[in-house]
Image 1 (cartoon, protein in one colour):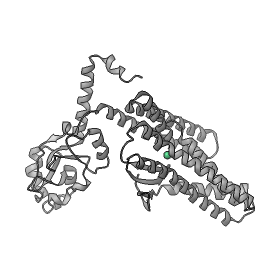
Image 2 (image 1 turned 90 degrees about the vertical axis):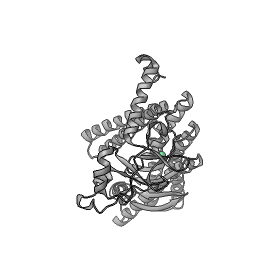
Image 3 (image 1 turned 30 degrees about the vertical axis):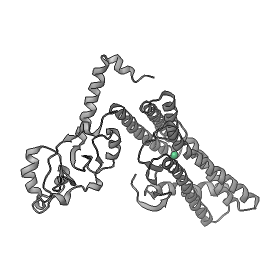
Image 4 (image 1 turned 120 degrees about the horizontal axis):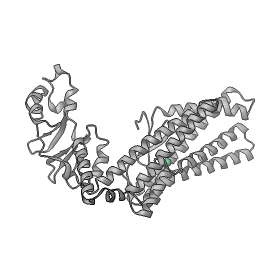
Length: 391
Ligand SMILES: [Zn+2]
């Protein structure tokens, strides 16, 4: 999730907004200030409705943020770093830099979000009750009543057992604890997510066709999002299962061709790229330590007329932006870090920080293919291979 506006840091986690969050903000403000508030609490000035709508929207975002912070705090307590929290069009995202190691941790990280939303609902209800008893304006009481309702809705929706919703994570944790197989549990939770996503899309289309207004479009949007993420998660879980036990050193292309960091691009293209057929080249210093990585994609982005005056070191991806691995690292864990790399490649270093290999997307797809063949061969027959998927 791209962060457009940075808000600050809470519990050591970067918090920001994506500009798309303004769409929900606008929907809430307009819905309240021009719809619900004037209908339920008539005879106030337009400004009163607008201010009440804006304040309610801001308090809603605060409660949404509390939900994500709760996920993050519990994740950090369970040894998982949180890259950042971003509020966006469809809610909030806390980006975790790793996966829970036990079903218990998986359950706790997931369930604390909806519980926080329920707590926010209870607090809102108490505030509304106090304001009512103190004789406050109905409109102000109504703001907190609305916040209580929307937080209950948020908690209940997110507890539906369909990944990537929190309820889907709870389902995954439960199946994992029960059957002892995380990857299979994740596949089941992701399938439930796809099913639920399709259900929402159908429901949304029916709503658009048979009811006035365009509220159904929102359901279609959420449904599409859920199907998308659930499909990616299912693929990721199957990949983890396929690559279990494979290490970075097993798949890397060994002895990569090192090139002189000061070589101009035109010379590099004529002398190196044409003869070696690799798509990435490490730049090394005299001790074979890494200075950066050049890919053909990076070379291609430089204009023809600039290639004689541009050196490889000018366009290389610097080491701090590259996923760095060691030969014994499980490939699945490296893959998670590679998703955030800009060039889709990882560099493998030995104990003395010397470059011993490079892992490119084609190395990984080759590993996946070979593992698929191995699984088939060792099982002896198609039936035996299929049975591993059944509970
Ligand atoms: Zn959540």
